[in-house]
Image (tube, rainbow, N blue to C red):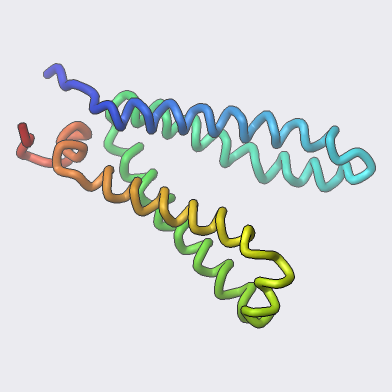
Amino acid sequence: MNKKKPTGISILSVLMVLYGSVFEIISLSSIWLLGDWWLAGVILFLLGTPFAIVSIVLGFGLWKGKKWARNITIILIYFEITLVIIWVIGVNTIIPFPFSLQLFGVYSLIPLLYTIGKDIIGLYYLSKPNIKAYFGQNKQINK
């Protein structure tokens, strides 16, 4: 059965592979970029490398239409949303909200809002019936 790859899956796959590659380059270069703080660079490398590899593998899995890639991507999206919520609650529990806004600035909220936004769009897209059908997880294909 020859199934046509949705354009959004092609874009998502390429972005995930690029993200993983750039993340690995940054992770690897952090050892040298941090200079005297080389130990922090090694820790960043050791923590960052698995995330980069997972992103690259999932990107190729999505490209090939693998069910496991879609399922793991959805799980990781939920995990990322949970981490963002914990971060926001944690920072605002430790530092009262008006003060944290003064301390970190409004611009500290932009990456968090971006992350939540892209995750919601990703969940919506990966839950569409034609996308599920591409991954073989929906019996009926919408035309």
